Structures are given as C-alpha cells and as structure tokens.
Image 1 (cartoon, rainbow, N blue to C red):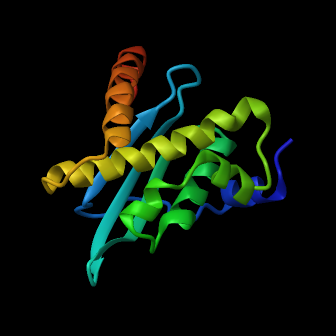
Image 2 (tube, helix red, strand yellow):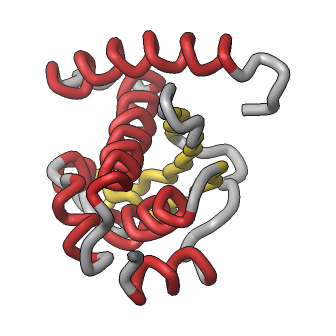
Image 3 (cartoon, helix red, strand yellow):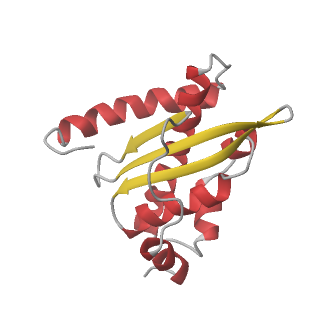
Length: 156
C-alpha cells in the first residue's frame, strides 16, 4: 500500500519535464522492472559554491518511480553538489512516508539518476570526480547497456 505522499507525488509530480541546455543529465534504468529515469540539472555559482539551481525529471515507470523522482528533485534543489551527493534512498523513503519493500529499488534508482547527472556535470566541466560517483557510473553504464538491448524497440 502506498502512503498518501507517494500518491500525491505520483498525481502531481514536482519538477517534471526537461531543462533546456542542462549542465548535467542522468539517465538510468532498472533491468528487472524496466523503469527508466532521466534527471536534468542546472548548476549555478553562489560565492565559492556550486548549487543545483534547477532540476527536472522524466520517468517512465510505476507510481513509486515517479514519486521518488519527484521527491529527489525537492530534496536537492538549491543544495550544493556536495550536499546533493549525500542524499540517500533512505532520505527519499522517509520523505515519502515509506515505500512497500518491493518498491524500494525505485528510491535507489532516483539516487542513481542524481549521481549520473552530477557525474555528467563534473565530467563536462573537467572537475574531479569522486571515486564513489565514478564507480557508480561504471556499474550503471553496464546496466544501461543491458536495459537498452532489452528494450531496443522502445524509446528510452
């Protein structure tokens, strides 16, 4: 059973859509259920800090996938890159008032999408990429190849 917050974010997702000329894009999918998330970030400077000034998503998936995508955008908008990298799937689940155990993977997918968008931003700007983000990227690249082959006749 979904919480009221999950249903609310599913019916009225926050920050849905694309960002024109994003600074970073995270594209991830789950090879078992077929959920696909695209997360777009815009990064601005505030003094010496880099801030996620805008963030949007497009998700093909279930209510939990859409809800977790919506919540992660709320959790990191206005935060520094460093703060955003610390957001966990537990933060998402807590914000949603829980998820059924079989849907927890959606919260992990949302975090992966964010990390991929950050990876993309850092790489495009020749900035150091933390080891955890780099290792995550390598794992996700392998998984996306499997997903794209499985759904090669579907637009991802």
